[in-house]
Length: 167
Image (tube, rainbow, N blue to C red; front, side, top):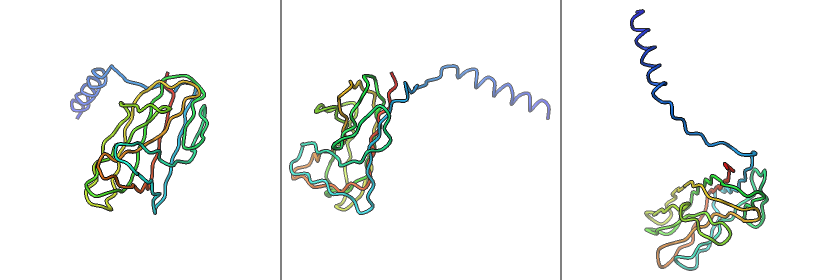
């Protein structure tokens, strides 16, 4: 029994000593912003044209170092931010959608996710994360496009976007 315990102790020590590289993301100055929505019945987001981005209607969430206005998280500090977003939505059958974070009017290609829905009425989820630079006064939004022609409206059941200053 003593030999088994020592063997387990050695294996555990070897495992933890072998994992010396640790990755950490530090929160700088506790600067963060969140916007969200959740409606069981869903909120219809009219999409009139394919390949055109439409802003998701959101509410202010937790804010510290961000302001919120007109579906926009507005940064109050220059920095590098970790962006996370998720969305649950329904739309047209066999339609393909793109969900992306925008800074001001600029699409952030590293904050883009693609989602195809099967049949009409299906509800699917999508999410992504990225690291981007944002300056004070710039705004962050969550937008959706229908890549399929003809375009179909979507019904958003829930969506969240957060920004966390890491540098």
